[in-house]
Length: 419
Image 1 (cartoon, rainbow, N blue to C red):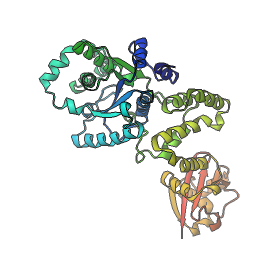
Image 2: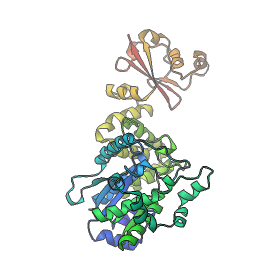
Image 3: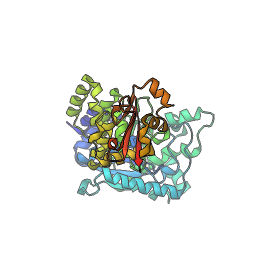
Image 4: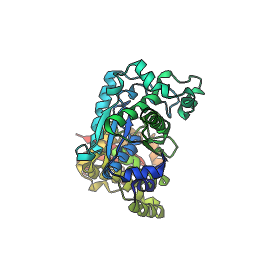
């Protein structure tokens, strides 16, 4: 199977330049390609992960990836997919963000792979020295305003009352120039990105043709969407960051354990390296018994391992199992230390064990003890119904200091006992 066909099997192809020519180009040997990531935040997110792994898939197939940290374009912000203009960041913040995401990219791409070693580039190095007149003569003159107005993201913004600033309007030209520079300096002949970047990619292809006469290529992947149709991105709020300090491995794992059944197959194909044949088998088993969440578990394991490494899986899976009904008596102390970082925690003393319902009230899981007394079903302590455990003692504490409270199926709270 050629690489384009393999990517199609993983639903990773949306738009391309001539597909036959692109497949033939890739079959001729090691090609250089690039994808850009603007440092508009201190971390990349799951929405970027699909494109990062796309670069890795090309690298694994024998090609050379360039990861572009947009130190220049990040100062402006792509108008695509946004209803309002992005706040401008100062240079200090941009530099800090660029350094952070550069370190993240190093976890996913092989920068020591000989001829196919990845390389990190920053478009500020060639954009900043360029004067306004030079940019207008060498880049701007090759584009008509009519063509730029035809871009969906520009047109949709113009139709709004606030319109679009010239700053964001010029983003397409900057990205087109990036492709030209990388073509001339790195021999780059393929740009990849999400499908919302197709207009910017074709602008670069056209600029290279006009300036050099060379034909280059482009490929986009469908955007990774949430079940509500929103992009996985920082602009929409609730981003899933690749930085463990912003989104913990536990939170990442939990998110993918909860994804909609209909999204499991697509996410396994696009966000993991699980072979397509295995994905098909997992999907079939999952659809036959969705209540077992086998597909979600495979997805959560694979994504968490790719992003944070295999060492985090043990504690994260053990903590997750507790929240899905596993016996807490079998969990080790490390699991509870992890839960104490992720769940709401109430501190109490040994004397409070005499009144178990009161602990639910203190934890905010019940409005009053009378509420529990009138309707005790659905309240659990360490997996046991509160009906049977109105009074506790030190022997009920997990690892000598924890109680795991639960209301219903999903509301959990950890009580930490001292004294």
